[in-house]
Image 1: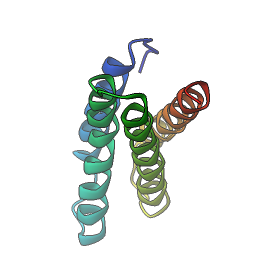
Image 2 (image 1 turned 180 degrees about the horizontal axis):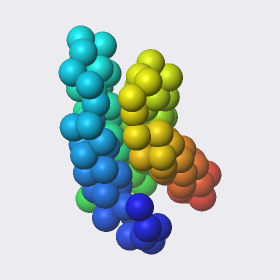
Image 3 (image 1 turned 135 degrees about the vertical axis):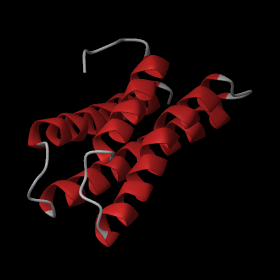
Length: 116
């Protein structure tokens, strides 16, 4: 994943890469449930960022960015869980996704700080 400075595009690519990664997982009950969770949270990162950019007030903007940060943190959680409970896994891909979700969380934290 090359780093892009357009955050809407970067969050879109993150959600897309998560979906491509999920397709590589072994079909188990646990993986199916974890996959549903990480698909939701990874998509919500960008969706809430887009809503933040369309917000009508600074308060609403900060609220949406906080949701994006929360969803990025949640994505990290589910990706770590998948990573640590699967043996036959594309480790390089999942570690890149974990790194990206962590970086997105840090970016949203910085936006929140600057908005105060």
